[in-house]
Structures are given as C-alpha cells and as structure tokens.
Image (tube, rainbow, N blue to C red; front, side, top):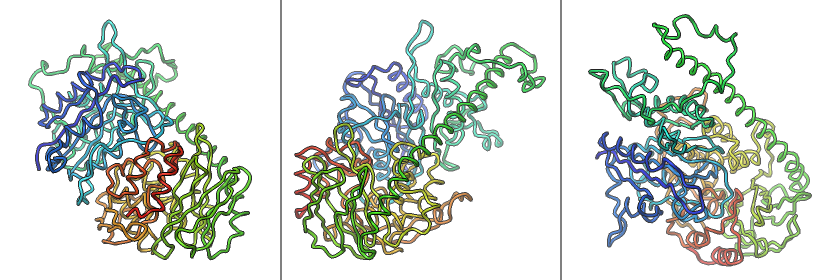
Length: 640
C-alpha cells in the first residue's frame, strides 16, 4: 500500500453565514502536522478561491478523457479527512457547508455519504475529523457525497470518527484577542494531543512497552476529556463525539521520542496548547470537598502551579459529571415525550382501521389527526391500476403501483397528494402500510411510515415501536454512540416491521459499520423477504435491474474480531454469500439520497433532477408541481 493520504477542507467564509475566525489557521496547522507524519496532503480552503463540490472532486479525481482519474485515492492504507467550517445536522448525517452557502444542496457535503463513497476506493482505514456544528436545521434537498463510487469494491475499511460536538449542539470558534490569535476549541485540543506527550494522550498499553504513542483509542479519550474543559475555560459548553475504530497494531496517529532536554518541551505561551484560560471564579468550591485532595495531590513540592492544576482538574470533573447527568436527563425526557406523542394515536388508528382489512391481504392507510383511510387492498391488483382516494386530511390522492408481491418481492406505490407532494412506498406481502402526512413549513411531507404484520406482533409490548424509532432517528434521540446496543434491540423486529431494520441500518451507518448492515441484508434473504432499499444501498450493494425493481448479491461477512458480550450474537457471527430482491425503488428515508447522486439508473436520475425539492420530512417526499408531475411520469414509465 502507498503513503497515507490527508485531505483537509476549510471554509471560513460561506455565503449568508458568519465568518469563522481561526478556520484557516487550524487547517494550516493540521496540514503541517500531516506533512511531518509523511502523509500526502491535499489542502483545500477558501483563502483565494471558493470551495465547491466540483473543486474538491476535481482535485481528488481529476477528469481525463475516459472519465475521472481515481489514482490519487487508490492504494492507500489510510485516508484521513479533516473539515473545519460551518455544519448542519440532519441526524445521523452531518452536512458540511461550502462556499455557496447553506441553501445550495449540490454544494453541501454529506459527511456519511463522502465517507462511505471513499470506502469504495479500498483504503484499509478511513478517519473523519469534523470541526463543525451539528445544530439541527430544516433544509430542502440533501447533501453531496463528492465522489463517484468506484464499482467492484466490497471491502469494509476500519473507521475512526471524531466529531467536535454531539448531535444537536454547536462547535465554537474563538475570535482573536489582544493576547491570543483566533482558534477553534476542538482543533486546538486535537493539535495539542498530536504535538507533545502529556501523559493523558498516550496509549496506556503501549506505554507499558515504553512507547509514547497517540492511538485511535487514546486520542478519543483525550478529546472527550479535554474539549469540554477547554470550552468551559472560555465560558462555552462543547462535548465531542468520538467513535474510534482503528485496531491494533495499525492504530497510531503520532509517536513521540523521549526528549533529550527540556528544550524539546512545548511552549506554554503558545495558544495552540492553551487550556482556554480557565477562570476558577466560575466555580463554587465547597470547603467540604477539600477531602478529595489528599496530601501530596498538589505536587511533591507543594508549588502554586500544581495546586492550580489539581483544583482546576477536580472542578472540571465535577462540572462534567453534572453536565452529563443534565444531558442524559434531558434526552430521556425528550424521548419519553416522543413516546407519548406517537404511541396512543397510532395504536388506536391501527387497531380500529386496519382490523377492517382482510387479514390475508396487504393494505395502505393514510393516518390523519382523527382517522385512517384504507386506500388499497389486495395483492393481485394490476401493476399499473390507478386508484383515487381522499386521505384523512381531505386531500385528493393519486395511487399507482409497479411490481408484484411475492415471498421474495414487493410492490412499490407512488402516492401523489394532488400536485403538492409525492411519496414512494414499498408494499410487503402480508403487511399493512401506515403513513402519516403533515405540513412541514408550508410543504406537505410524509412524517411517518410503518409496516404492520397482518398477523399481529406478539412481542409488541417489549419492542420499540417503529414510530418512536423513526422519530428518534430523525430528531437525534437515538445516539450513534448507542448504535450497537439500540440497533441490536431494534433488529429483533426487523422482519415484523421493515422500518425497524431501516432505522438500525442508519444507526450502523453512522458508525461506518457496513458489516452489520450486510448481515441484516443476509438475514432478510434467509427469511424469504425482500431487502429494504435503504439497507441494500447502505450496504454498498450493486443494484441490478430485475423487472420493475432491483436484485442484489450480498457478499459474505466474516466473524467480528471484537466480541461484545452485551450485543446479540447475530450482530457478530459470520454470514455467507446470498442473493435477493430489493423492496422499493428509492430510499424510504430522505437521509439516504446522498448515496444515489451518481446512480446510473434512469429513475434515480429523474428524482435527482429535483433533489432541491426534497421536503424536510424524514420520509422521502418530493414537493413542487414540476417535481411531482415529472417523477410520477417516470415512475409509471419504462425507467429500466
């Protein structure tokens, strides 16, 4: 394999957004570090020219006569991508804002999409380091994965993911003062960890071998401990999200030699290594807590600097503990609120309305605030038969289907709500479909979608309802840090309600865990069920046209090397090669669209033409008269 590659992207002045101080300086420093570590460095910033998706793509895969040249990305044992600038979250994805500004979806980078497309170039490892906000925003359209997927790859590289803040929160850039230059809180701590050993950033296992190395795991621990403290020192609250995935022995970012003299020590006056200048007056120190400082805890000589350091460390620990409790309590309250908002009306509607449908048939229901309207029943309707109905909101609904329902296949319905919006819904055999249409900022969008077995769910009381799972996914109640635990629980119901499998796939995708997405695809084939489109897409499987739909080949997945006793066994076992049909023609959830930018299938190209009219609702919904008419015509046409 060749030298590692470092891709650094910095945007400090996007249109219609505040200028960010310290971004260019942070990018310069980390690129200088990467060059010293023998990386090939690609540095892209807006110092002299706007940063756009086309500019990044051209630098990474220059256009030749026969197409993009991938040679820069090939034969790399490690690719690291660093971004600093503005960001917006559409959880579990993050959008990086480039020079054209936040409203141009073709110049917003989908961090997850970019990462997963990079994986197709077969590096052994990928690291994504993002110093950008993850505040939620209602955006039309989606983000861009930047590169074309390289066909033929099935490797799942190891992944490190270091985000400067948690879902729904902000990162902070500190302006210059009379004594300090501008800096980014997260990046300054990152550079401190990579620039000099201080004990806390050193991998403890390698330290036993007398090696001073910063590894994937020790860097994660260091950032999670020191970023909140540095932010607190300038009266800010910021906590990173770190998901280390590099495994020994190739997990080292930096290794230090023991200094020959004190001249090699870092300069305490350098703002790069500043702890943010914590002011102890911000804290209330209780004399009763003095017992936590044992004799000698202030340093062997009892010097004033050691006293300050130990007191500050103690107080920061106290703050982090209280802040963690507050965040966890708030998350729990928000999640319980989501349960009370969703469960009662949905269960009532499903019980009253879907019970009227014949138990051996599939159906679609539109859920409104007062009632559910059965739109369609029967497995044997003609593929192009058209039905008119009135939904629970009093709107006219056109209804089209393509495909057929069988043990391993499904129909796809095109729901057109007048000329205002359009949704694409897979119909599974022996399942009712329930969908909810709401107004999102003057646009109608599909807020909820679920499949309910006509035979009922005997384990419903102990399973997370798909309405709760979808809302938790789209609004950030389900955190990627809990992905394995939550996804394992949700996956028990993936065959009773495919939405459960889809939600689990996006949780795994947030961690870059393609192996478990492919395991799910395999399990659908063993249950003689079609694979939900989102799962096939996130697994990186080639979509092969098959009638009015797609089929896929699922590669074998090896047994997990890291055994997690708390995870279900089926999330860690080896699975064989398999083949199956795909349920649906496009992503069920809007967050999946960045993965289809370069799809060669004409129906996806028809949809992508109107990607800026993708509504902000969590379930894929296109709005505007032109998009609705064009996509509906493409859906009914011979798009293969």
